[in-house]
Image (cartoon, rainbow, N blue to C red; front, side, top):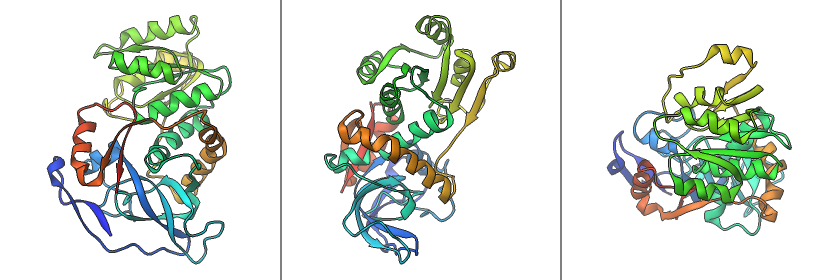
Length: 328
């Protein structure tokens, strides 16, 4: 099979397309013929040598999500057939023509989605659903903050919040992205630079002085404290990203007084059962919404795999609104 190969750690120039042996399924695995995948920060960080793949994942083939057709079945796999259109998350190796995944990590692609659209769904929507609903307890009428609301997960989170009958407040560094976020469900938001202090007052005005019930923080660093200061009593801050830094200044007096929860989360490092549970919860709640168009993947640009270095450069430049998708 053809595959994207990281030959070393470095800039996008180290990326190569090459041949690797076809994977074989274990008893509980399937082999998916990848029609499209998407680029994620994890792939960029892995290329830079800052995010090694988990044990058992290909060491030199990136890619953590896929859309394609089942090409082979393990001996103990039931409920799936050859040719089924599926998508989902992988520990790695999805930037290849074939990827091996555990059968419990599959979801069916809604019939109307193209391969490019389908590839933009798994990481964004499973992450957003797990953070906001499973861990954040999002309910009808709640108020939710989404930082980096123009990112892939951010655009999914805004739509999910609206679909659940809640209200969303988005943050971004671009006025254009904020306007586009409003079309996806943000009832209000703010453009932020290095000074995050205006966020708290903006959330206070938006929430009539109450604060937010849950925050999906996709940036990390000082954004964690900005979310904490913007929360209502018993609010939940779910930290998903750390592009803004790994050190967190935190107002502990406020954390205690408001009885807040600050929780970190990651999907890639979870065990088979936890990933299966996250996939099942997403499929139960979100597949009907994807099927009827209540939510939709946001694709910024589609690249052929032969231009994957250009996709990396676009992501590092901070350009995308939504997802960058790769197709064979």
